[in-house]
Length: 238
Image 1 (cartoon, rainbow, N blue to C red):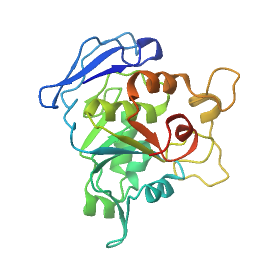
Image 2: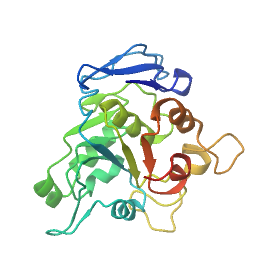
Image 3: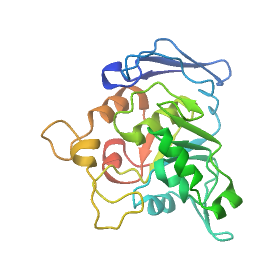
């Protein structure tokens, strides 16, 4: 199977990723990156999770826990945790600090901050579930570096990594990309995802971000869904 990726003008990867040879090998036919004009291959981990279920990408918006519960990832045993049979998890940015469950992957566009978030992970979670098994970024500083440019927020980079790893399905929880609070902020705190960081076309409020739109059309292949917000409107719900 071949997956066409978004083009370099969007700061993403241009080319075709082909999954062959038992579903564990991934090769990139053509790689261009709009991030500093540098090109480098996919990391060795690419394709290693094909056939191993789906991936829940967990952002740090205030709705993340409600999204996870509605998706069936609430576990009541013990003190309570997050897990869903057949699904791996990836945290985005600061959520790694307080995520009460096994973390297969952690992603951020800013790996120097991601490493600090991991150091700040609560001791009870570290003792019960451990830390993230793999860290990823589009910049140097994580265990695995991926050749995207970082546009469209860390959430989009996390989704592209999930697809690059080979997961057949990706579901977003806590990634509405609206102006609601995130990072543990109070409910009256607003952000700027609809106006700047993940805005639509210039002058259109609540429009679809051009980077997400291009990635959806060229890379997602209907594999990506979201539980809430604007991303649910763009991608549909699972």
